Image (cartoon, rainbow, N blue to C red; front, side):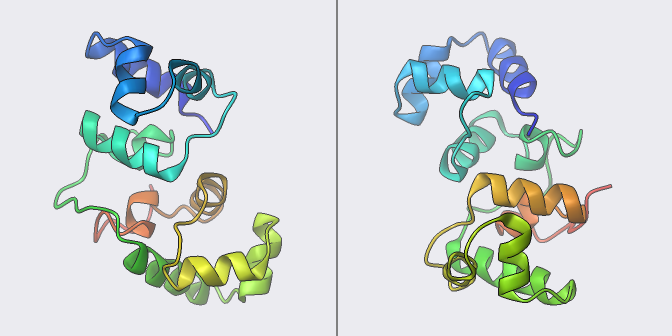
Length: 150
C-alpha cells in the first residue's frame, strides 16, 4: 500500500499535527504516526473517516488513483459493500474459496464480508483493487461509479 505520502501531504495541507488527526480518529498519536509511517495498516473505518474529513476518495488515499474525489459520495454500507464484493467475485468467476486463496484468508471470512457482517479488511481490499483495477470506493458502496480504476 502507498498511503503514507498522501496522509502526510493532506495533513500538512491543512496545517494539522499528528495529534490533531489522532483526535479526529479517536486513537493515540503513536497509532496515527504508525499509519503515516505505514508501519501499521489503517483499518477501513479510519480510511473512511480520513476520506470524509479531507474530502478525498479512498482510492486517492490508498494511492490507487490521482482522482481526488468522486461525485455523489455516500456513507459506507456493510450490506452494499457485501453485495458489491459478491458481484465482483462472480464477474471474475471466482469462488469464495478461490478469492480467499488469492487473499490468503478463509472462505468464511469472504462469506461474512459478502453477507455484510463486517467490512473487508484493508489489505484484502487493496489487493483486490490493485490486482483487478477496481475502485475501493465502489466496492465499499461509497460511489456508484466509476467501477474501474484507470
